[in-house]
Length: 314
Image (cartoon, rainbow, N blue to C red; front, side):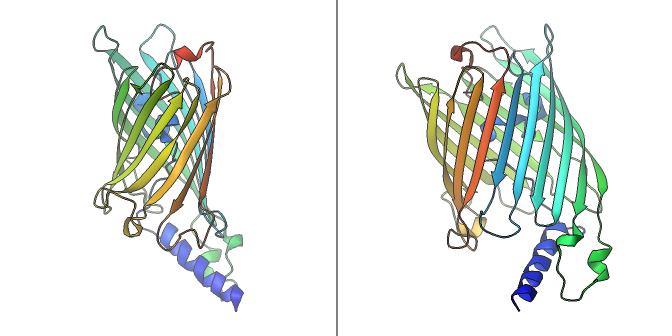
């Protein structure tokens, strides 16, 4: 009986996440301020040095078939040029459904004034591989043709764009990272706006708020807000809220959540971060152990933390 219930739940879950024509939500990270490249191609080359960022997010830990997302992104600036480059790989696993995407990013950075304000325009070109591991599906009727012959292995091309206005004290960007769709796997087109700034409180203490606004077809305008308290440009800690603007505080109706972010610069080159959040509603803490996310970052050719002044890169 338990196996049948699990099969029915998995079947319902699969239909929700992979049915033809059903619009899907794109994977995002709580530590988005460390991975703007995944959302906005115009970010690549924003700094003079190359950086490599790896993230892993385990959502709803303890819930069978819960999403697990990994990302690896690298970007830099072509020496002596106004051009930035980037490469990113994103793997999103939800139960038997696995989506892997690879993207190439390019951006042109134009200095607006002598104060260091820059405007960048970027493009993203890539492809996504969509797969269903039918061996993970236990159907009520053995050998159900609907799953034995399920859709799998389609390569979906993608094009995206973004604009990014940045300075050492603030940034704001707008992007649509996915413009193309397919009949097999329809991802709801998302538009993102990211904003952030740095405010010095004392010589050692500063505060860095960041907000991500997300709009997708058929969904309310959502936000992801965090405020990090930074000490000595090395340690950071702060709360995170995610909900819809219709419900300013996290609300179960809109899949809201709250959590905590923290991290440290181990050296001028190495940084690590951690984020925890718990949701409201049906997948509340009584059904799982929350969501956990780890970030590791390496900045090439950086010898002094004073170089890391931007609110995008601590």
